[in-house]
Picture 1 (cartoon, helix red, strand yellow):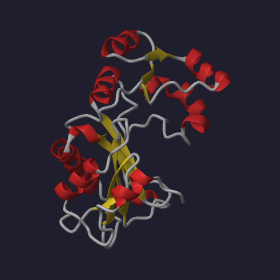
Picture 2 (cartoon, rainbow, N blue to C red):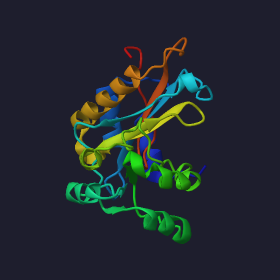
Picture 3 (cartoon, rainbow, N blue to C red):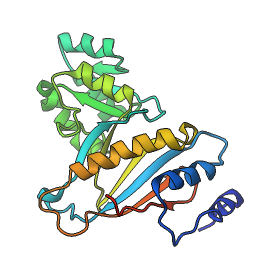
Picture 4 (cartoon, helix red, strand yellow):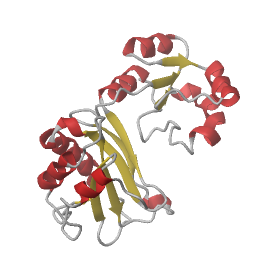
Length: 229
């Protein structure tokens, strides 16, 4: 795989055989984020569970102390009084069946998060095949199916992120922008890792956190020492 000169120069700063403590790892990630835009910093956590089993799923949501640094567009499925509540909270799009049709007929996806009140799940369920693969299907576990749509919108706008296992038992999550600096990123990292540890399934056996890597959008990965977790 071809890597540009900037990436190669950045990679020289990192010893692949070393697992760094979190503050040092985040310092390296910020130092190697040399793109012309403000790179997103992501954490990749490999867990010792098997996502094929329902009792070993790890999924949830958390509001990061310092937000994500990204403005997220929120679509809300609601009716009656909840339409106004969602709009007042800052939802970008609010509606019902007309939005379902817009998504299915026009292949419209100008949103980052979907929130729904429970009484709308009958029609939202029709979008399962298109929203599911994109990770956009609202769910009670993520706090995106809720009677309190205004609170859900406020939390997303404040920097709420969802974490869930992929098919290879890895959680991929943004924890902010490189411009945040190591201290703010660490506060977000600690909040996320704390939530993931708390969400450990009772059925999980052996070592829970197998590995953890931090990286910016265009930068190399930095391995983190997970012994204390």
